[in-house]
Length: 496
Ligand code: GDG
Image (cartoon, rainbow, N blue to C red; front, side, top):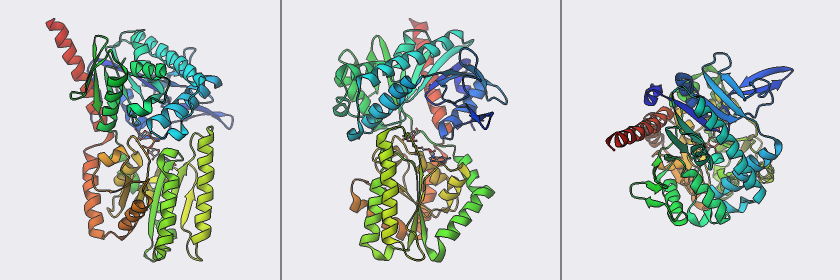
């Protein structure tokens, strides 16, 4: 890992995210500490430990309040405290309105342009505003008590209003925000009441730098500002917006994974045992193993993938028994009806496919409908001959990168939706359009029939690209950009 702390020089980082890096939960009469899986926490936690900053997040664990002081503060990691976690507690109404409602039933479908799932309610918006205020107050309090000059870094769409609210309450030297998901074009943003879209864009313009995964999302944001915020001056060529006497930069910073960690995981004895077991069970007699891994979310194109598999086995009977598909589907946001319906649809479609095509020696789809360990995941990535990523829209898609990192034997093929950020970032996958089932079926066939030498060439190319695009490179490029912005401003002020 690079020395990320150097980019902060004598400044401290105050991070704001919805999910917290450590959660205290009651389990069997004891309090357990859990660290949520996922790239963001594993990249930012070492940075926070090295720089002793403050992380502000929703205290969602059942024992969080018991383990924090009266302001919601607790030092973490609990076993070896190095930085401060400031928890903000939410009641049920706030969770329903801000998190399940406006974040996940309004902004999530809107940003992914899947408007059939869009469910706007005034009450959701009211709670979203209140909760953004609440978090902004907590961040502002942390800015005021910081011993070193703070930089505030906001994560994601849960906090579109926070930058402006923080700016009106305190004076950090720089506020920036990483937007993990796509940003919609203006015709889609228009589905929101105009005062709401106006507040969201102005809220985001409270930042000094806004980071997107791809050029396309950055341009959509610039287009929306140019169309809706008439008192802003948008320079799309230079990706800068002049607004309210300030300049706001819009940047492209594709997120990645801890490549070395995934490579090492693929070599772990537990992963290796898993590879052998999976291949022993499903790859006998030269049969190939297909894999998909996602949260059960309508953005991931799970029904479209099942439709393509059905058509493949229907249209090409010789493909039956030629490969088995492992579908790792992690339950997600089950409080929302649209997610529950999707889970039910997925389970029953898999059942129908298996009933229709199975033979005495072969089950077409093996559904693993639960959260699995990182070792199991790495073993499955390594064991797979093809990996199917069929998102209808996806900010980046880390699964595609994790598969490439774990393919230490360089024999797997990535079949990747062209609507993922990853498709613009790595070159070597078979690109498909999940809305075009015929093309999707052809893509799967091409992958299954690809020669060993072509597989190796493509996988080696992707692995080389990935090694120079790790999550630490992502972090370093963002923090060095913020350092440059601060330096340019300091120079401009001293010359004035
Ligand atoms: C958002 C954006 C963007 C899944 N099941 C299990 C498990 N996972 C892990 C995967 C991967 C992560 O969850 C999913 O990441 P994705 O990037 O694929 O998708 P989102 O959750 O939608 O993430 C996305 C990302 O933010 C980062 O900016 O790429 O576009 O939508 O790491 O491995 N992990 C374990 N067990 C599981 O069962 N351990």
